[in-house]
Length: 293
Length: 195
Ligand code: SF4
Ligand code: SF4
Image (cartoon, rainbow over all chains, first blue to last red; front, top):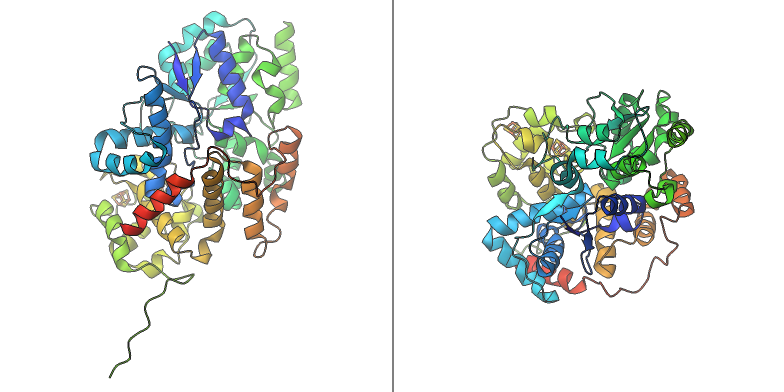
């Protein structure tokens, strides 16, 4: 098994630890990743708010690059927003020849052509469907059984395309987390919205949504995420939320491959753990106890 | 003799005309006003019109009501309504269509959102990928006359990100780079202008 890899902009900046830990875990599992050559931004949540045609053309550039590299390998994407943009565009290119022609008229400016044949996959889909919990269990060297983890899926890896999980009551992370030895925090917030880019444009609304999620995580040692926007919203505003609502304390927020990598015994540097914004002392001491056990 | 009316101008704040809604009306024509979209929406608590009422306003061509409301800018694209609508209507996409109309109309009441998206798009137009420092500095520059305290809401975070080396210290007006998407953006603009 091998994949083409689209990291997307966040993973080269504010979410570098997601890129590091994804590569490290895939490497440990013997899965080669080939980064798309000269990939460009997918348009994030901005293009769709400005121009329909651009919101298709920007992902299509990257689909065209992938199709030109190797048509047999799926394109793996860790960011849920990038994933949905490329997935939606691939579906549209396949099903709607008129729109495909329009997009190709645009792409001709950069000497590219898109067909829509590239198969776009979310990192969680690849971990849950292609690799599976057993492959993770085989590599575990550090026992994490004293940790309780709240799986947070967010929105765009689940909806509107229900590819690998139930879009309302997702469970796909649970076997993967259990394979690391950790327990699952029972909660109903896994598929609730974190407010996405509202944190930049409608902060009060986003804080309300994130507050509800952090509050429901009480009792968990950490929340794990599979999207840089979810991760940032959950980890970066905890002080503000604690001051405003007075009923939440700090919660450790990790990317799923960081948790898996910890169980594999990979180093903090390899997993970019020092880059996280919310890893609290409670979690640090529990983790130390696990490594020394 | 009647004097010729001045040609209609699209000033800041001009509400789009009813015809502009036709494409969206077609998408949601089958709405039965059941309210499932409202019940599914995580942002409904902050909206002045519920999603169900917004779709009613769209079907009735009530452009004034739609474009004084903040409802569509409060859609965070969670796709819950799209998933659950019993008529299978593409509701999140219709929210995007309304955002696009507000963006093209330069309506100042939507400025926090449109300025944010606009600066994001200009940054990738110039560099092909997002340069966070450039984009955020330009966004704050646009917003500070009306919201002088806005950057302060994020300074704590900004320092943290700089300290972690996650935001580069970069010149916010750097020249376009080798991945510039200028030609792509220009082509899209010319195709949209002639559409
Ligand atoms: S869920 Fe669908 S049918 Fe029901 S009110 Fe909303 S748009 Fe109309
Ligand atoms: S997609 Fe938008 S309108 Fe629909 S439920 Fe989610 S936030 Fe609300």
